Length: 344
Image (tube, rainbow, N blue to C red; front, side, top):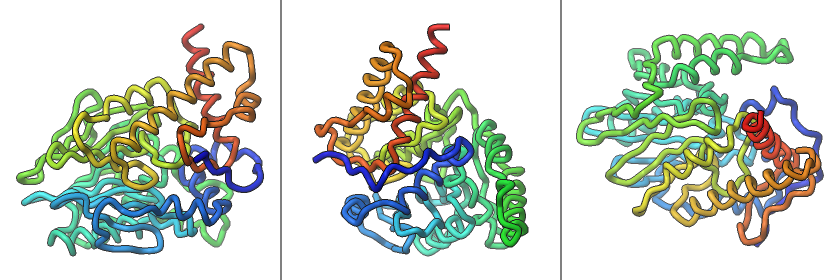
């Protein structure tokens, strides 16, 4: 099967809009055909223990659940994937989500499933759909989970995720209040070591937070050895062409290859259904194809816009959701920036 191209070509989103993957997903929700919605919501890998319009919580293993967001219906509560990892004495929540209601919902499910509100939260990177709902974890009164994020992630959340100047007056006060709560939650965050993994002992289970980069300047993955599960953040996308707006493509490819395990593993992508080895390898092949085409076009002196307009993923890569051909241009532009830095 070949990829779907959804709807007519739309004007390229602004640089500001594309900084967050939320814009990437919002555009998808607006133009995705019914057939592609069905592809996006494929059969879960594990039992579904809770379902909402914005996503489904799947049991991956004993004490491990993954939230697979299904935002194409328009519900923006979570937008990104995330999850819950439980041990005997602690519960880790992965991601802050798009809205406080998303974090609050996941925390409530953690309590239902484990008997505990999350004791730890990890942000994989700064994009608003993964971070802006963080304050929702503090809505239990006395509960104050320990948030972990890199220094760069914390800085970029506060710098780039504030409400835009174009926010309507009717929403301004609410958005400013949400951002202030986000800032307060981040003020207490524990800064992750950017040079080596951080182990979080949950009691009988250790989650490793591994510093990486490529999707943004500072990404992390959350990894379990037993069971073998990797929460990859937006370093991994499944069935949806990735957002390259902040990407350093060579570092992205290196991070993706470093996360791939030789044994059977469940991979939780930032967006899309849960992935197994075949899905992971198909994503690697997509990244390789984008690199090959970008290098060739750059060597020929073709502009990123023209190269993106001419590019097509080979049918051998199967179905990939493409919501705007401008996303190809963004990918080529990211590669061009990298190639031009190397030649200077």
